[in-house]
Amino acid sequence: MNCEQTLSNLPHLVQQENAEMREQISDGSSRRALLEHLRTCPECQVAYEALWNTASILESVDAPTPPPELAENIQQHIQYLHKRQQVSLFANPLVWCLDRLKLNFSPRFVNATALLFYIIASCFFVKLAFFTNPQEPEFGLTAMEKTRLQQIRISPTPWADLKNTKPKAENTSVPQQAAIAVQHRSNHFFTTTRNVPETWRTNTGTISKQTDEPRVANYPQAIASGKLTVFWNQIKTEL
Amino acid sequence: MIPDDVYVHKTVEGDAEAFNELVNRHHSKIYGLAYRMLGNREDAADATQETFLEAYKSIKAFRFQSQFGTWLYRIGINTCQQHIRKSQSHDHKLTAYSREAEINGIASDEDSPERSTLKDEQNEMVQGAINWLPPKQREVVTLYYMQHLKYREIAEVLNCSEGTVASRLNQALKNLKRKLSKYYL
Image 1 (tube, helix red, strand yellow):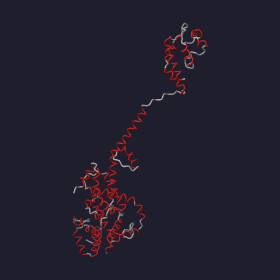
Image 2 (image 1 turned 45 degrees about the horizontal axis):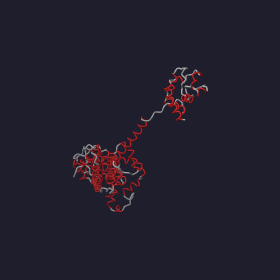
Image 3 (image 1 turned 180 degrees about the horizontal axis):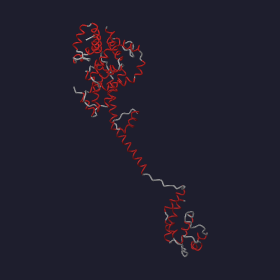
Image 4 (image 1 turned 60 degrees about the vertical axis):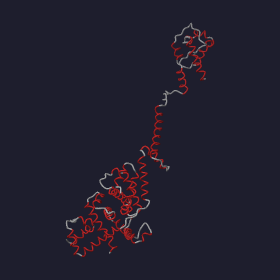
């Protein structure tokens, strides 16, 4: 074995584990041959000593002492991480807020609070979406027109009945109150009292003789009287 | 003494206190590794903390095929490698003079009384020489000489063959001899 081979294999010899466990050294040369060369070559002996000293220094170096608070810091971080892992995903925004406020609650409490919040919020949105009165289409009506439309819907029966009733000239017993009611609602679709002479309003007995339009007088007396009275009262209340 | 695996099992089941015991057992070793790998105390403390946090996060991935300490070393090495990569730009700023000064133990970021002792000077000198090594050789030297791991364990930690470990170690020893020879001749 020459010096070059010896020098390349010296680190193996220095490392105790290698020296003990491996009889065969890296390039195939045996440990015995390496030791024989070392015994006879002063230059390789110096190199071996240098390596041995290097290894000795490395082994003799003290392990650095960790800062005393290091373990505690790590454990605190672990505890925090543990809590975060216990908190459900949906509670993360709440945890974020609590962290900002530097408040510390148990994970169960945080989960329960977040869950409660989501339930309340869900109920609110469900109510908003499904349990509110739908808006009627306006069809371009003004507020006053819509109010009138609603009034008509409240009691449409008298007008509809009046419209469908055929005129009877002989029936002259229309109550004055009903006639006045018709007169007040003259701007609606059923313009009964349009162009009605003044005498009609005061003397109901002459109505049928002075106009050809459908008359209140043609409506059966009892029904017309009752329903129109109701309607009159509604109008009076609104006015 | 209760084996590490018991505490690992407890941690997996959700007992964070069990992991605290593992921290108490292993934090010195991981700190030593990080200090030798990174060369300063602040980075070493940070890397140690990151190592344990990472270990806690991924403890369910521990398969009990190796010792917990070996697995922790692997995470520690990876964390240190990340730190080294991050600080590479900083390393470029480190001039040849400052490197040599670190080896001589005359330049430092700390100025504590303990530096006056011979032992501390030797430690600094060795640390300076280790810092000078390439990262892969630094890993092997640290694990072999400072952490006293076997070739097989180092190979397991570094996920390479024992032959590779021996080769890196030989090269590292030759490099260190060049740097340290003037102190013992």
